[in-house]
Length: 206
Image 1 (cartoon, helix red, strand yellow):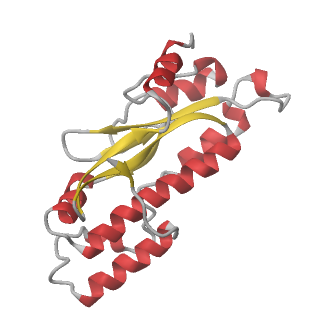
Image 2 (image 1 turned 90 degrees about the vertical axis):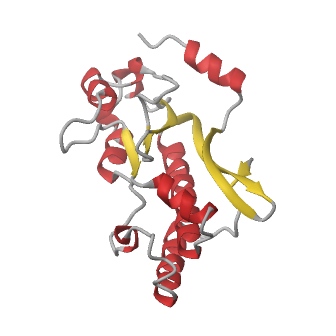
């Protein structure tokens, strides 16, 4: 397994590539969810939730002097429906820094989704992710491959932005398993070691 590696182009460029490949051979690309090719598609990023995380009014008073920033670990959860949820807090590894944020924001960010509302701790929601990976690994669909690489690029872009605004102690990134030249599966792999993950889980946050 290795991080997804392609020429360094933006997520927007990958989306343009996917649209072009779909237009060139729409029958072969029929398994692609059409909403992933729409003009306003942003790879499932919840921009409002990202803005809330970066807003100093969401942070604890101890950070008002500007000398430190709140700690954040970007985690990912893949549910049984084949969708992926990427969170700034409240992920499966339970790396949380409650004292770094106001109680009101922390409570909203760690509360699960309900009804039509997504949890504020969710910064990306990738619907039909497993279907997209299948289109890449099994059907070798060029448009799906471009979209998958676009998701990886968009996650990296978001991680870079967050690292400038908060103390990003770690994050998950997309990594791919290969069989020869074929991409066979995709996972979300932490950017820090297992030992460091254990340290982060052990840090007090009450």
